[in-house]
Length: 193
Length: 298
Ligand code: SF4
Ligand code: SF4
Image (tube, rainbow over all chains, first blue to last red; front, side, top):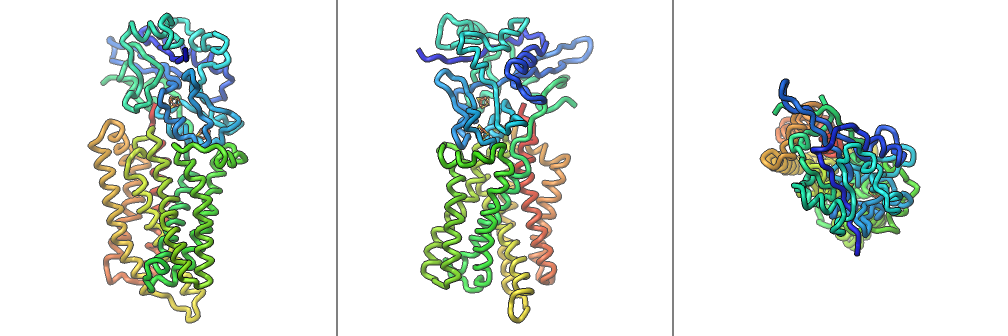
């Protein structure tokens, strides 16, 4: 059967260690000053009632991805198995996909001028490995797998937990599922003051 | 709520100023093309002096405009991909064909015009008007299809762009008219009737443009969460100054008032206003493109 890769993040388990950020950089040689996954952090409440909230964000590998709709040369493609990738030999670097992605999950490589993004570590998952971020997470907050496989961890994650996605109203049908998402943190945008 | 963001990652620039320049140039081109058809298609004889410079500028600007795109692109040498790998759902893909067809049409149209072949100039003009509208209108779609940014994703974006294109086109034609009269005509006399007619046209088009901007602001202000953020962003800070003061007040309301007062009907005043309008429309493009992407989405 066709695969449908998705990722699940349990925010109740996330400890905000930024390991996914770093391991992704190492694994995929992500250029300086850009990230393919990062952990948004927020401070909720006032002393003595305070809590840190974390939100790792990465490409959602949307079912209906805006980036693929707008790419003028079909360099951004949605593969059969659900992974959204950029063809590095075809991309002209127009950055339209970056402008159109509602999640801001693409970056331009300063050396080559082409746009790059998370590809679920394609080189790893094609060899039945986990993406680097999932493997590296010390709190085991992330699960990855094939949603069409009823025995997969991600299938269980989505069924057993109360899951939600980011910016559901875009109609993109994101495939990164969050459990325990804090909407107050998700709504805070931009840089910390 | 007592929540503050303590860590996030800055966004890279996506479209930036070169795309604003590109939108501005296509707008000027479409505007001057439409003005040049006023005589050859619609038969308004008083616009005759504008027809030739109009079409020359339309073709020239449209040949310049894609250069801004090439500067912007990370891999300009791959521009030919645009003609080989076509994605019908992407406005940029439509644009690559419009940007080739439209200059060709305007060059043929100009050729017949310079040959004084009225019949063919009219036919080409009729074909040219929709293509001029398309070549600028599609840039509005480029923004409105990119649904990530609330400022861009509005259905009236193409219309807003077209109206401001016509405004900048008319303003440029006012300047062209003065230069033409001053330096190139035999009697060294400026055709002031034409200048003032153009001013009168501008009054109504600026009013329409302000109305569209007003609709857009109201819809955003009373709309969903992201729309409200847009209004806050465009009314305060740097973009507040650029939008409210530079674009709307200086770039539109001041010329509107000046053009409606008969006592200020002087060539010098009109030329200054035309320059201000042209700068104002450029600021408008900048506000839309760069302002739109400055609103954080993550
Ligand atoms: S999150 Fe953005 S880059 Fe990723 S698939 Fe969706 S639209 Fe494309
Ligand atoms: S930057 Fe590359 S992947 Fe993105 S829209 Fe342009 S050609 Fe497509």
